[in-house]
Image 1: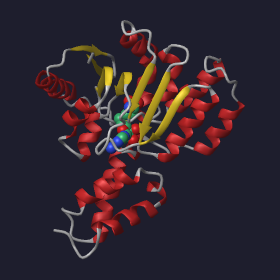
Image 2: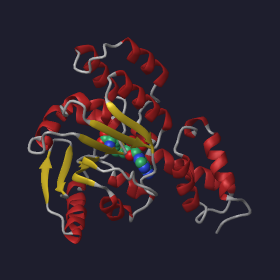
Image 3: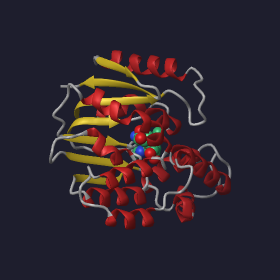
Image 4: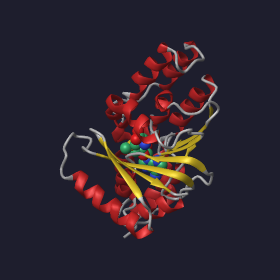
Length: 270
Ligand SMILES: C[S@@+](CC[C@H](N)C(=O)[O-])C[C@H]1O[C@@H](n2cnc3c(N)ncnc32)[C@H](O)[C@@H]1O
């Protein structure tokens, strides 16, 4: 039951909070619209909305990234992304987002294995990217490849755009709410890494819609093997069953790759 307040007030109050000011307003509206149906007061609705936003976004950051300092440091780096200082910077920053931090020990093997028989890779669409674009040098894409990335934090995507600019990568970073709209562009490879379970926390029926709406020759969809807290909890069996059920329904073939921390499905669409 909704009380005598509007969803507009909920959205305004959430976006006025420092912690949530950079979030994609469409995602805030999406979650506020869902929470308002279940809460009786403005205060409760704002609280439930921020809790959910924390769960789907902030939970992956043990500490708030210092983008201003990162931008300054970026400017002191050589323009060569392969340089040791550039790689060290990328590795250090990837530790700030729990998802890329967990992938770091397997990063080189990850892209070597998954891209091996797709190469040359000319275009990437990185959906709900987190800090994964900072792993670009480990991907060994073709010279001049394009990279399009999106996530829900505007300050993150502004930083990623500067990262692309500094290293002269044909890249584009922007905010998105995949629960409402998918980027329309086509790519050779779309990455949807460890994201479906996160999206399902806000909309439990989103997976099928999102998967079928992506325009790419190849889809790489992955799942974490452990929860953020480190527990396994039968997650692997659950995610495999769910995803394989979906690909069967959609009539898609897939290949399955199991890394120490991540289960990846590679789907050929074309
Ligand atoms: C588990 S992390 C994965 C990050 C990255 N794909 C990786 O594997 O390193 C989930 C990401 O989804 C983003 N996210 C959550 N809800 C989203 C939404 N509705 N639209 C787009 N991105 C979303 C979060 O901000 C977070 O960066």
